[in-house]
Image (cartoon, rainbow, N blue to C red; front, side, top):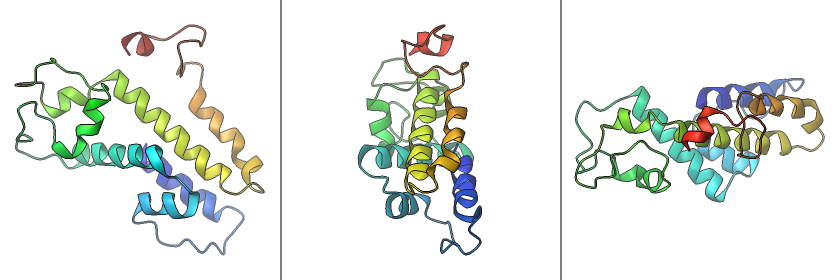
Length: 158
């Protein structure tokens, strides 16, 4: 999801605008904040999602060092109730077992969708050109609320 946001920014900035002033996309969170006005809880959620991505892409070979096997710097995500858990504060699944959660996946997709929306809506003149892309994140096989018809197995686990 992080890679798709990065790729979308490259396309968004350079499609029909070869003279974009955004040439270096290194600190993605800083670009989202400064260029696309992503702030508050959405920015914090994005940063947490990025850190979870880092944990998966560059795993530590040692446990987190906490009784519940979850890193302190991602404590906010655990507090949201998004992870698989035994519920025991003195012992829990390893990090990979905790992130293998449908609730976490739904949350990550929602964050991704909201970031895409912020990028698309950052330039009202260009927004219509990209607005239809947002519907890809609302496919019928991925309902985002209990009110959607045919609530999926994913939501029944939430």
